[in-house]
Length: 444
Image (cartoon, rainbow, N blue to C red):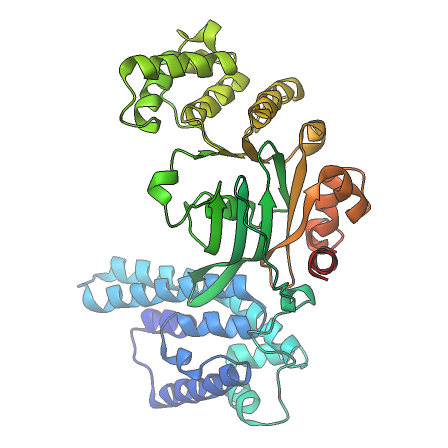
């Protein structure tokens, strides 16, 4: 489509009747192809959506996203060319822009059509027909019974993707209970499941490591637990439903993101005093706030540098200050996303030592870190999330660290992550195996 737009822009001509007929036949053929793959045919009538839906049928979703954007850009450029009074220079610019977009579009169309030939079990030479006289393969594949897709666009690939435990964690009177059915979003005209079937209970005083490869849903899971991005789930902390009583529970859940948000020109004590005004209940007096700030500075070893500017702190000191800001409210659940990012082994060890002390006070601490083995002895439990065959984050293991080594047959946490990562990501591709194994162990 974009190639036609580009040619039209260059020639300043109109589409001939034969071209209109080809477009009609292409639409009719694609309508039927989408239906064969389990997708509603009327998507062919929606600008920008048709290429994306076709990419799902071809198993080339990432390419389909790019094509949808490129189609939108092409349509916008053509409207500009039609409705804006132009001169020769502007016409030349528009023609060049359309040509560049069309060439990029061509590259991604080749990828989508290549995937489609694999789905239909046809030879790669069909790609040339799709690019030149696309209405012919569209009509043939759409209406001849001989051509059938090997799988539907919405088919879930992989054994674990079809597995649903049906289990449910017992709600603890004290501690954290998570019963997450699913977390979904809509992306490019499609409902996408990010997380599914995750159930666990964590007792007070436990420090928990959250493991998983890139895209396994670790941050999404933490956001669902703390209520920042609600899922179809029940999250209960010390007997109170976090979702139903979110405002009342905001002081009981502390979350430290990977990037700290502090003014570099403020002192340590001023930073904490400002945070105390936001995080402590309104009935706290100025004296109470000051006392709590001094108590937290003592816990995190910040008293000697309370007058120092934030910009003068070391990386480890900044991390401790960032954590101290959240700890002011004395939360029962403390969640940290890569708090040791950018720290060397010594500073990381010191930081996690402080987190261990927090857990020892009866708190629950959940941490994401990409270098877990240097501090693994400080953790009680480990959560392992893995992507199933449908690239949905699933629970592959939850329990004591030592038992995790036995369960995966690996000595280190990094080896465990490697075992569940996809082969193309440098892993062993055993995610489905462990998701099923854990489900069978937990729920019989």
